Image (cartoon, rainbow over all chains, first blue to last red; front, side, top):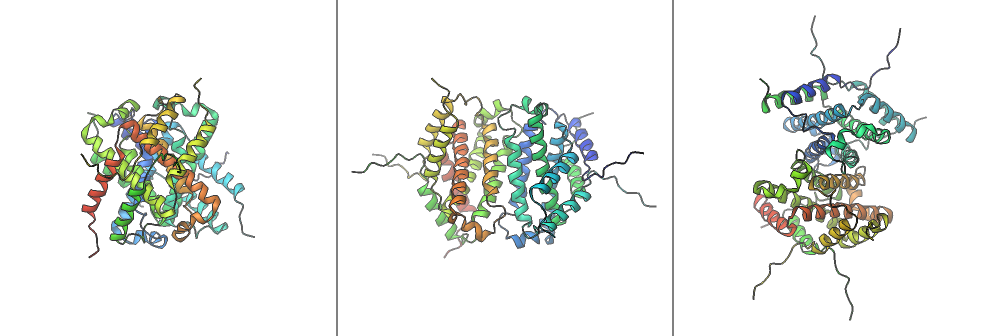
Length: 114
Length: 114
Length: 114
Length: 114
């Protein structure tokens, strides 16, 4: 009996949904990794705009305002959609990528706790 | 017996791992949504740099070069880490956010298929 | 008689205009370099969005469409305004900075011409 | 005798220097507006990274540390180089663009001073 390593992140269903969405609209021609990297930039820019004039303390309370909360959720979703779509088109396994990165970060920044 | 809606994305294990990572290094003080939005920007910038001088066709083949593939995976992981950490700190449910966004995109851009 | 080195870029009048603009609206409190770096990100994101689905060839012709031309000009202006305002608040001499960077780029990437 | 409107920004000498620099290295083929928008993104990302973990107060003092000051100057220069190069390739008159944008901002955000 094989044991599976626990997954840190699972994006499989979202990747399928985005692929269908693109196919149904003939958008695959536009979804080169280069273009998707640009789209990702645009969405991150819109997310950053929601926080640019807030203090750090205000940013920690940003979800208390329902209108702002909805905009934050929408922009974070847009960033995720393009990131996952880009990984899917490139064939990047995000779970492996994330696992490797956390491991190497752990070596780079050792825990300061006893 | 209730039936659960299928999840498009599952980030729970990653959120826990990142929270432990931050706690063990006393980094929670730095992880305001404002700061994390900036860190996200920086990582997206590094990802974009890998594609800026490539043609679209070259960008579609970018994973064929093992060195480039590793750099792409690392930068995509960094973007994901900060995005998920930011959602976690804000209390954004990424699965709901993504589901809502795909639905509203579906209304905004109807399928062109018969 | 002293001879002045030719300036590559002159932003003095714009810096004054932006300072007056901020003062007249009591915006100096918001114009920390950190906040301005975020505002710069947001504007670059909006500029990138105008080019994300264009081919490179289409991007070279982007100014031929008057509506698109106006949007490009507006977004480039926004990027410049925040970049110059940020330099002004920090006390960065953009002309010196640019001159130094071109020199070091010249050493890093020697001309390929005979 | 005609009187010239005062310029807010003068980038003519820098545009010429960057054009010569690109020509001498056969880089004009890479300098599509699309690619330059991506390069601009990358440089903004590097600039933002210098401020992401600083408080706003610390960001206002960032130039007091000579090492940090040099890095900030370098990254601001890189952003300016790509912004001006992009304007030059597109044929955008940055002085006009900036003048128009300040005027429209003035209408959008009236002065709060008596």
